[in-house]
Length: 144
Ligand SMILES: [Zn+2]
Image (cartoon, rainbow, N blue to C red; front, top):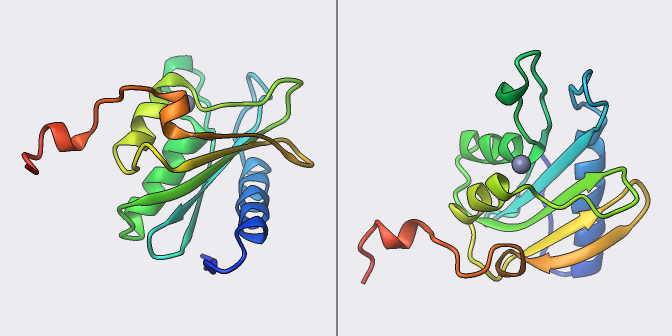
């Protein structure tokens, strides 16, 4: 597990994208051969990586973002401050609808979501851009 500083945002973006690229290389995607990696920066400045894991029973496969979230929870991180997702496709590989909601559980709508390919940042969005008017844990936790 690496740590990131708050000092140089551009360098941190590249670190986060590189971590997602590293994770992508570990993906288990024998059916689609569509490798995806994700990396989360948490509120402690720690990085957590995930990759997609396919299954012969197709719907049982899991996304890279879900793996990164599980790694964050295991390491006792609770807040996503930024997330990078990397795939290799002509169009930027954005989180699927389900993952947008999974991210929302642990993130403010304003956090950056960096979408990269093997070489560069392709798209920078906020969670609110990808999941507007979202439903989150504060609806259920009675934090008034
Ligand atoms: Zn997904």
